[in-house]
Amino acid sequence: MRYLFILLNVLFVISSCFAQGYDGYAVDNINVKTNRMNPNVVRRKFSLKQGDIFTEKSYDEAQDELHNMRLFKEITFDATAKEDNKIDINIEAKDGYFFFPLFFASGGDKSGVSIALIEGNYFKQGEAVFLMGGFSKDSINSLVGLSINDNSYSFKFSKLDFDQKFYDGGWSSNYSIYSSAEDDKYHNPIRETRTEIEHYSLTFAHKIDLISLFVSPVIERVSYNDNIDNGSHNKLSVGFDISDNMPQGANMGAVFGYGLSDKEKALKDLPQMKYGYRFGFGYTGGGNWTGSDYEINKFTTETAFIAEFKKRHIFLLSLKAAQSINGTFSESVRSVELFTGAGTYSRQKLGSRGVGLSASFTYYLLRNNLGLFAVEPFYQSAYLYQDGGYANHSGIGASVFYKFWRFPFPVGVNYTHNLSDSSNKVSAFFGAGL
Image (cartoon, rainbow, N blue to C red):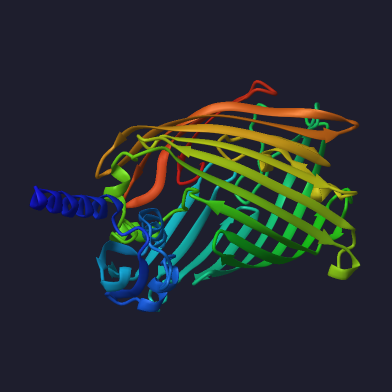
């Protein structure tokens, strides 16, 4: 009986250790082996540090931090217990580098082309460089960006030259570098003005854990043929962003197999629902102190919530708001800026302040080793203050798209019904609307 009691106690201790894993152990050494990347880059990104208390949850989150760098073909992790309740973590990451060119084109009345070059990890620092130049028949655009460690830098230049049109009900044409022309069905604008916008901006952002801080000086020259607010609109934008478990951007290294280290994990069902959030706030100001001909004060804020179901379906809810205080026409709040971009619109509402709500549900019809096939219904609505009252711009629709693991841009079709003017728009997209 005595030996049976001892045996049961030993089994209890063993089973307790097995159930608890290494939770409560202190992290000792973090050993990193890579193909070419500086191991210190991996250690810096890995959120578990020497001396931290190990938990399975923090270990899994730290692994995701490395996966989200999107620079590895494969990563293996091993946690080895030592004496004195310490633990070593061993990381072996198969990384490389890539250069990838991209070419985009759009047709129709507003045809244009863009050429981009993307570089990743060539200098062994886990960096990413993005170079892009594009033009249409009356617009040009260029962007240079660098992301390294927890810092990112970008410089943008664009020049738009287009006819801006205004319609009954407070509608205005929606313009961008490749989309400033109106659909033929919108006839007889009540006002039309030739618009030229020349824009230069430099943006610096720094990330601290979940918080990203940014500052962006802007030099902007605006000209209308009827002198709405011609002159310099130089300004400075500052703000912060807090986010956790939000979807990542496009990963061009996937073409070469890099950045897919968690594909096997992503194909499996989640053990339980996963939640994420984002909160951002920004201020844009201008005046004599920035060399602007006008006083500019504009505030923006955004809150987003995401729920990822066990089958990886995603529900996204977003709330945005903006306020322009005594702002010029060029600094108006636009309804499409208060949306998430799920729909496509030829026209928009303008106002001095506004609030927008968007909701979408991404339902995966198919998930396999080749890619993801999904349908994504959405609803979005914005209210803008104009002429002493609030005007509504709402839309509903859906996208159907396929996204290859080895080519991250989705390919599909979008249908948008503008609830505010009963117009319909069908567009194909290859990473972006065409």
